[in-house]
Image 1: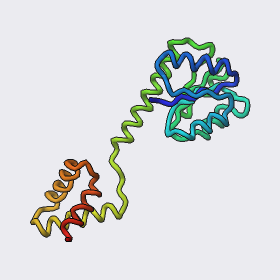
Image 2: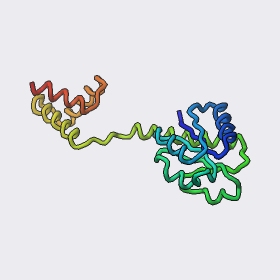
Image 3: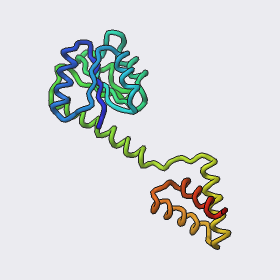
Length: 182
C-alpha cells in the first residue's frame, strides 16, 4: 500500500483530490496545506507520493522535494505556464485543469514504480558486517575439520539448515558453533 500525501494550499482542493484517490482504491491518504506539514508527515514513512502544487503557503515545490525522505516521489499539479520549470529532478508534472483519467493513471504508474523499488530492495542481498562474515567462516571451518567437508559442502550445509529452520545464515552459524564446540 502506497502512502499518498496531498499538499495543496486550499483545503477544498485537498479534499477533492483525496476523494478522487479514495474512490480509486487508495487508502493511505494524508491531507495538509503547507510544505512543513507534508515534510513532517513524510518523515513517518519510508516512501510514498507527495501530490502538491507549484507553490505552497510556506515554500515552493523544489524546496519541498529537497526536504522529503529519499523514498518519496513528487507529482506536481500546476498551470501550463509553470510546467516547463517543474520537469526533471525525478518530478512528475500534470497541468491544471486535471483530466481524471490522466491523473489516476499517473498516480497508478508512480505507485507501481514505488512497489517495484520496494520489492527490489527487499530481494537485494543483505550486506553482512565483518563480524557476521567471520562467524560464518568459523562455522564452515569447523564443519570442514570435523566432518571432512569441502568449503562448498560446508556452505551448502549451513544454507540448508538455515532454510530448514527459518533462521538466517548468521544465526545458523552461531548454533553450529555452539553445538560443535561443546
